[in-house]
Length: 138
Image 1 (cartoon, rainbow, N blue to C red):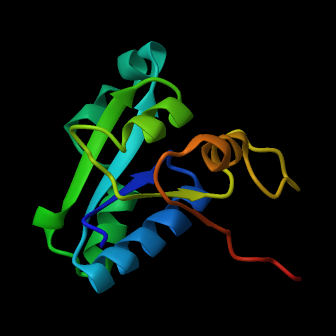
Image 2 (cartoon, rainbow, N blue to C red; image 1 turned 60 degrees about the vertical axis):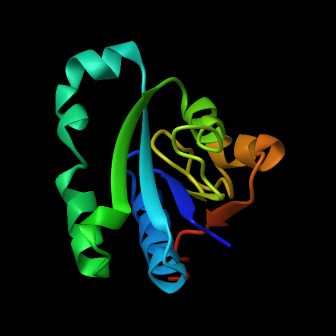
C-alpha cells in the first residue's frame, strides 16, 4: 500500500515529468504527495521564496492534476538532494516510495541518469521510481 509519495523537485523539466507521474500515481492510489526541494545555506539565503510554498510551475501541475490540496505538501530541506530524498523514508515524511526524474539541474546532455537518480538507485531504503524524460526522436 502506498500512503505517501515523496518527489524530488529542483525546478528542472525532468522534475516536472516526475511530478506529473507522482500526482497521477497519488490520484490512482489515494496517497499523499510530498514534494521535497533540497537547499543549501546559499540557496536558502538567495531564494527565501522557496520557504513560502511551491513554485508557480509546480502549483500549476498540482492544479492540473485535480488532486486535493490537502493531499499535497511542499518541504524545503537542508542538504544535498540525495540526503534529503533518503531522509524522506523517515519521520516526518515517512515515504513509502520516492519518485525522481532522470536528470536535474546541472545535468550533462546525453546522460541517461543524473547523479541524484543514480545515487538514489544505489542507496534508497524504500522503492524508487525513476521517471524518464520524454524522448526527442527528432
